[in-house]
Amino acid sequence: MLPPLAKLKYRTQSWLDASQQMPLRLQLTLGILAIIVPGMVGYGWLVRRAMAQMMVKSCEQSMELVATQFAKDVQVDNSDLLTPTLLQQTINKWSSDTLWMWIKYPQQGMMAHSVELESIPTSVMSEWVDMELPMAEPQAYYVDNRRLLVMGHTLELQDGTMGQLFLVQDTTEMMMLSDRARYALGLTTLIVLPGLVGVAVMTVRRSLKPIRQLQSLAQAPTATTPPIRPEELPEELRELVLSYNHLCEQVSKTGEWQREFTNQVSHDLRTPLTLVYGYLQSVLRRGDNLTPAQHEALAIAQSEAEYIIHMLQTILNDARAEAIATSSPSSDQPPSHDSNSSHSAH
Image (tube, rainbow, N blue to C red; front, top):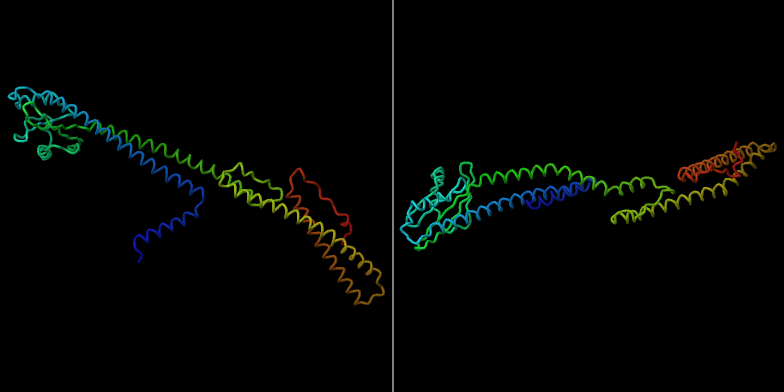
């Protein structure tokens, strides 16, 4: 049994080996998508996180401003005026449908609170009343399908009394706006992603166009196959193109050597064999004094010479046909017959 890490390494290597057998276009497309898709998902996540942080920061600043103004309102010279009624009036002044607060003294407990807090479940409210300052950061709560943000502020009055002011911001509407923006971003991503995929496919296809051209030309290189200009291609393909041009040059030289060899054979072999064949025919026509054995030997020699001449003629005709097929249209000329071809083997 292999350990888990070894299994993972083996499976990863197997997958990499299998992916190398996929078409290059598919490999490049998948590679681009492997960058685009996680990048867009990560971008969406970062945008959502940034929007949430901005919303929380805005709420913190708003509640901090309210707490500062609240402290100014309750700072009076006469401490006898700091009654629960006065505190309640001040809380009612600063409370709203989305901003609630309560104030408590460490020794006396809750002194006053917003009316909206009466709708909060008892368990949650008990937890809030037991809160103590300082708070490391605002606390987020999800109560009755509402998203609430709670933070605290220390009140230092002129008579030296230390109070604790707690504020609750209802962020439900802001979070709904944030969710709508996130959904809009996700919808935009879904709309843009196919376009990006199309651009990636077109880019890969265009990048592989020189390879396809090279492939179509290299399937059957001939002596007249035009060389590919490497300076017009990407740098990664220039070495391959130079090798291909060298191959075409070698094919052209080989074809030229083949034609020269064929012409040489036609001149050096077919002409003497034709003379020998004609001499054998003449001897056989005038060989009345030949013995049957001599006549048979000369007939066999004549037949073999005729076969060799026919084989050389076939090779010559094939070479000429190939030269015509591989030549450019502007240089196509009717094949010229060798002067020695007049010696027929009939």
